[in-house]
Image (cartoon, rainbow, N blue to C red; front, side):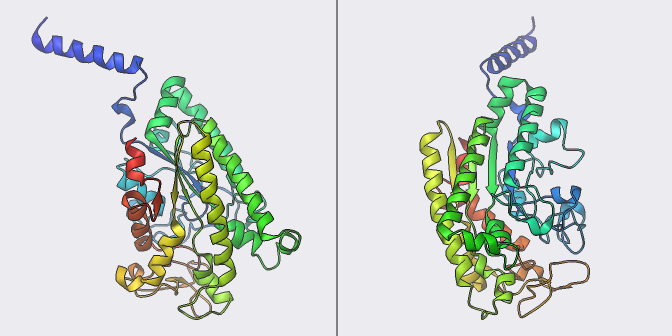
Length: 371
């Protein structure tokens, strides 16, 4: 046997030994993101269901290079925070929407996006949109992917892939307040019959169950975002008629209370679920920092939506073909009455991937990913 052939034989033996030990070899590439949540991270699932919560119309996506500026169902002008985090961690491509017909076979090794505009932790959240895929159903949908991964890789390799190469990202909770507890008409029954504490207990009870279900399906590396300052979004500022430098108090108080409970939950799960790492993304303080000091980050406004109409902050009518759109899209913190612009998402993602414990704890995503 010549030298080259001998080397090739040794390499083959080493590779076979690695596989035998259950080690993930390079065919898995740069890893995967499995994304759960609401319209902050929806990559187009709502395009495939009859829902009033949709973003598959212009000018949404106008700055999304991968689609040539065409709408994809993302509720922003460009990439979502989940898209950008995937890029920063070296993911080969964006995680495709679960409901897209081509999200099969090898495509799922890049991760899958289950998020749905209007979704919440509670199944009742988002009824106003008729259809949306809540967190319980999103976890059910991951269970389908989980079986596909077994078929694709074999049971042991699939488990190893998920535990070592996959990050599970959860961005949910805003709609449980905006489109449930705080809804003026639809939820009056909820608000009258349920105190804030009782409502928060409900949210934490259901989220604990959802995260634990993902753990039983071999999720191990989690990043869970807390709820942002809901009282500062253009929609809330418009309907409550507050000043440009003010935010609405009640939504922010509820978000802060929920965030305290979420922090406790993740500490509990880190202690109780062997091998799991739950990281908390402190989106509330990150967005407050952007809103408070927006000129320092190159923005011209943190109160007026770039795309929308109505009131002082263009905060009533969602972005669509007939609404007005600003010229300097990268100078607005908010793209529409509810969602950050791509420029804001880029800044948020940087802090979550590479920031310190003020904004992401107990470790940042680059460290989590490397474990």
